[in-house]
Image (cartoon, rainbow, N blue to C red; front, side, top):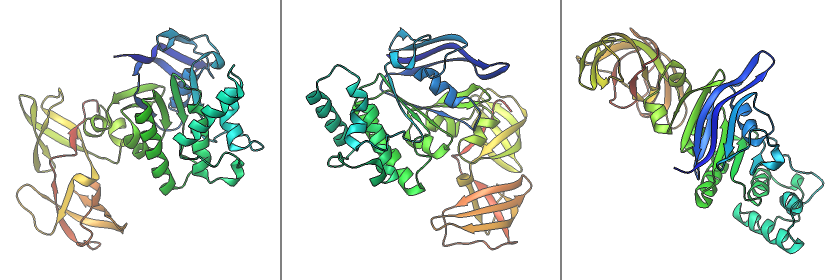
Length: 351
């Protein structure tokens, strides 16, 4: 594994407050890693530490195998795309994209050639003479990406890049960023608080909480095998309920969830009370039950076109359910029977 970024026991303090605490991780070359977490968890501070916009209080930072802990932002081989795009309003698109290159020792012809290539990469050929004010939000974001790309950085950094875009545009631009990253094999660090965005673009996600990384893994690992209650609740929606492990059988556990019997990977747990994460899509509702179902009552039903969101009251408490069977709508206050799918139910080790 070729290391693009490495943190060794990095801490950043502001007086008595630790914004990040004893962080150690490696980001592999050519991968897109997302720092995900709620406001104030330390993800933007971590990004700024990579960029050199903040200096570490303790620990060491390496980029491309070279220690950069005490180097300024201008001496690090990184480019950053900001939440606000940070385009110069009085400069044309071409001038904005060329700006960083003009600081180098390239000739005017080389600068122009690289800037045109950058605009072509983000599908903005022919927009060079426009001002930022003449572009849509999505186009401005792509100009900011092109400006960063033309510098051919060791690491490309994104700080909440889609937060100023509407929902439909967010989806399109995140797909464009991911396609570009994979095509150019760029090492990319991406900060967001949006779980769906993180799941959609990442090779690896670092879930941050209270200045540390709670869990590192692929989107699928984090969704299906959360290490604690925070990760289970933060990555996608999860119903956290109490259950009983009745028996451990090899790597499996025989679990009783309010009267529903399931076999789940034991994840190192032993018999007794345990917390279980149940994804909303893993709950099935029907009008008739069986010996492996429990009864509930519909408290809320919200039709959202492609699916219906229910709140169901049962022995486990109030469950949030996402049902794709929109042709079968369960009415308020009616009784339903609850069963669980095999996927999307997991024991939580640290609970």
